Length: 230
Image (cartoon, rainbow, N blue to C red; front, side, top):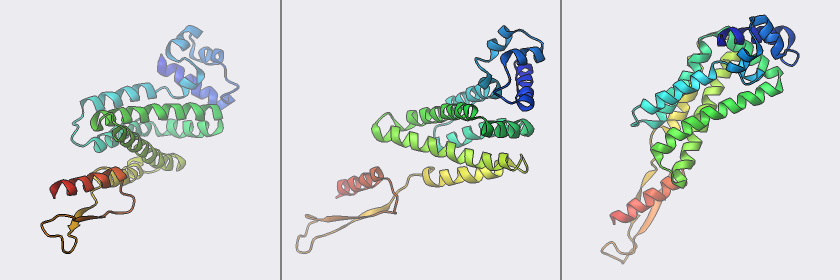
């Protein structure tokens, strides 16, 4: 019934426009009562995105069971679950994309759905990185990066009308995320240089060389490690 209602709603949205279609129109076409509609969809907007609740649940289950040895890889793989949902029905996905571009209310609703995915990914990463300030910040930044990369590749495919392989563009975008976050951004090890005339290692100066853009917490971590060794 959920699928029947969603199909009826989307058919009318395309024929009449989203704003001009009422819930009564949808249930009349589907041959059911209003109660049946609201049993499955709280609003017309929800009928445009009938598959996201299931996909969000699948994503959550995947992250709950995944091996935590590669947290960034795990959230990238979770993003691919969303991609497969879109790719399973290219015609519907392309039509929905075009519809959401035309209706501001649907675009706002879509952004709220995207935010729920981002929060799910960030929650998984927080459990991995810890609840401290840096752990939470890192989780939020990585989750936002994964979602942005996924959406960039997905929209390229949708704008093409669903032509070609959607995974190619998304995999390329996610590879950039993993390149930055998938392994520790370890700067060049700090090398102590002794101050002349002050033997025995006392009074050494720590000179840190790091790549531009290296997170400050990582630089401080390396400095502390170097100081502790001397």
